[in-house]
Image (cartoon, helix red, strand yellow):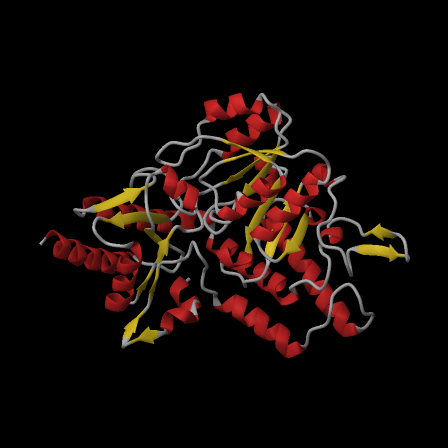
Length: 396
């Protein structure tokens, strides 16, 4: 398959030149199968799901529930364990608020987390921080000691959206199991790049956002292990999440529907299923080989440039497909602007919703180039050429 031909966005030109999109850790572009699925749904007609009794509602509900089955299978879960929310942030808040209502909430997490996996725990519970080294690797010995205090839950990302560090999640989950500690994994930065099988990982909760894996925005997935669902209350109350309502009482719906109050993002869920089918068709081995090549290539370039500091894992170390760096004497926003104006290269600059991690490394805002399945080695060379010219000007 010619992967690039599947993404209409790549045909766009600005000032007579194609775009180079290196901001995939923020959001991904959408392939033709996702666009076609959404267009087909809009053209054939929408109806609300799980409500009306007519042929149109039956069609859309069946497609929606088939999408749930597809998504559940993709992550190795049963359909009753998969709920739909608006994004990973909402999923984390749902778990956090539900656990906090069950009793005192004591949480282990790290300052490497995305703000979405740090702030809710600070608001609702008591947080202890697991240390990590300059490469972003969690200190497992320190984690073992912290687990002796019997915390309620450990919340951790499988891959850092700032440094790209891949955490040893199987070992982390094993340690937590031994200490009877729940585990929430945020796989938003790994879901498009490597298989995430909840049965294999053994986590209690897993979250990710659709737009990180070539699907529509506004949809998130919350996996809750069947054994962990019992007793976890809903967060949003209203239509669809109840079986019966009286003036002074109500009966909650079955799992997973009790966590899906209100009309869901129907077309978003169906579009996400199409995106996961597309990724599955490419195969994770092929995806990993291509993205690893790009990541190593750009890191070697960055490491060789004078005045440029690469943060996170070195070029030959395992990493999510991204590279974070800063340029001595230049603001990250200025570097990003130069890349965009000179070569239509789109990157991210700033704290990447991981300001405590920047503080830990004594780093200000950084530049982040992150890769997807449609990026090429030639695009990396374009990035390298602009960065080289920038550093030469600074050096002179």
